[in-house]
Image: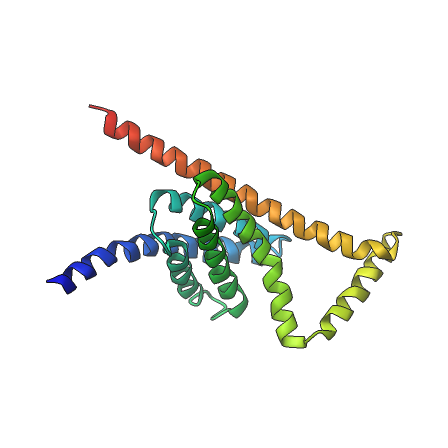
Length: 204
């Protein structure tokens, strides 16, 4: 009997995560594939905003520890069935975003700040993963190449070479802001759903 009770208690957590993970995965597979086929710049940023908004909204509905990480796992599995096969980079991004969002909610208990920080962390992960993966693949020499490219890019726009790194930092800051925007959208969506639920309960 006790074992059966444990199973019943744990099942809803995975059911909730499966529903939202599947929704997240459908966005990754359909919208992601569509944007990539158009070769639209900033596709990863758009997907980060969508995923942050979805997970932040869901976290307000289900106060379950590990929810975002479980949903990310479901999403990553679905992503492996996309037409391109198992795509290591996007799957790592999905799991990383889920981990970052879950970490934000473990650190901060107040819903609104947690939502913004969760989006911020998700935005930071986008560029952070890009740097870490290339560091693992190519070693520290990759940074010398990036410095040279930054200097060349600054020179092409008639800017001082020293502006290369500030431009990169600004780019990272903009990614962070887009993540915060996604967290804000998710907070508003979650609050709207909670409000409609409350009104439905109060309606005779």
